[in-house]
Amino acid sequence: MSPGGSGTRAGALSGHATGDGTGLDARLVLDRGAFRLDVSLTAAPGEVLALLGPNGAGKTTALRALAGLTPLTGGHLRLDGVPLEEPARRLRVPAEHRPCGVIFQDYLLFPHLSALDNVAFGPRCHGTGKAQARALAAELLDRMGLAEHAHARPRRLSGGQAQRVALARALATAPRLLLLDEPLAALDAGTRLDVRAELRRHLAAFEAVAVLVTHDPLDAMVLADRLVVVEQGAIVQQGTPAEIAHRPRTDYVARLVGLNLYRGRAEGDVVTLGPELALTTAEKLSGPAFVAFPPAAVTLHARRPQDRAHNAWRTRVTGLESRGDRIRVALAGAGGELPLAADLTAVAVAELALHQGAEVWAAVEADRTHAYPA
Ligand SMILES: Nc1ncnc2c1ncn2[C@@H]1O[C@H](COP(=O)(O)OP(=O)(O)OP(=O)(O)O)[C@@H](O)[C@H]1O
Picture (tube, rainbow, N blue to C red):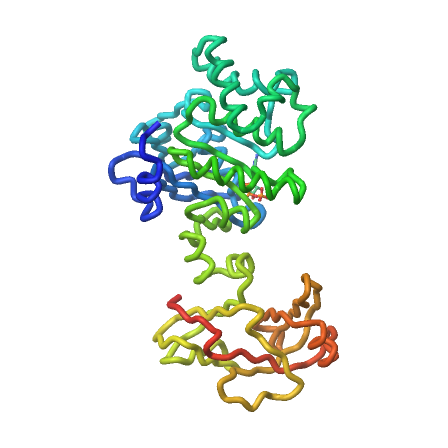
């Protein structure tokens, strides 16, 4: 393990180039019938990447390819400068010889082995003597707060405990690449909160590369240094959680971070979205542009607001959904175009007598919109 965790981490956060050959350098090309995955992933030691994307985007396929469980059809995979796979050179290191720790959704603990022996299994396979492997496993379980469960079989463990054993097992071989597929998905909400915080601590201390797959934007934002959004087998956007949250570039990402997103053409502080609608924005731009704003910035009115600081356009209600103390109103332009989300109080919804199909004026202040080049 490399020393100076915090220094390594700061380096990792500043960029993902692996100019010195350390860390992950991969282009994963995989053909599976009609589906093609082609994603390039690089990460410096200490960096945590989260692969996010809708169902069927190719996240799990990418993770399995990194682990060596599904062969590449093209591209390459290098870890710390060591080639692990390159189909063009007929090079392929089998899964069991890759320095990878893997945690899959269902944990894949061996049911017939105790927690301790599950964790000791990897080091044993790598040639560590039995006593030494078990001592290492006991230490790891202790670090995870599981010392008293060392001799329990997996079925006697809670979901959160089993998840921690899986993490201990994945770390036991000091992997250079840690792969986690939906690590929190099987946990109930309460356990998830604790395990997420704990996993965050372990990942922050982990000095090699970690790649996790998740559906949950919160998991991704909390656990990862960098988000990689995959749609239909390709990367559509990547960046730090803050970058992604501020500047979504696809509808999926906008929904993920809870923003309204439109694409149009900017001329000064006006972005034209269609023949019927142009929004005045806070920024001045020129050329293709995105405009984003949160649902909480949208107000709804029975009549056209007269205030000139507001952008206003006619919409129709397409849905209403309760969300905590707010109501999320789904709207679309009169012709069904430009879908829009607005968050209102129950009082506002009642005063406007909103219902499916109701016509209202939507308004958003220029200052609440954010425009950036498309
Ligand atoms: N064994 C397989 N043979 C052929 N195609 C497959 C196989 N497994 C997955 N696919 C296809 O590969 C594509 C990507 O699937 P993958 O499971 O990687 O997506 P995902 O992003 O992980 O989705 P999810 O979030 O639903 O788990 C899908 O279109 C799927 O139908």
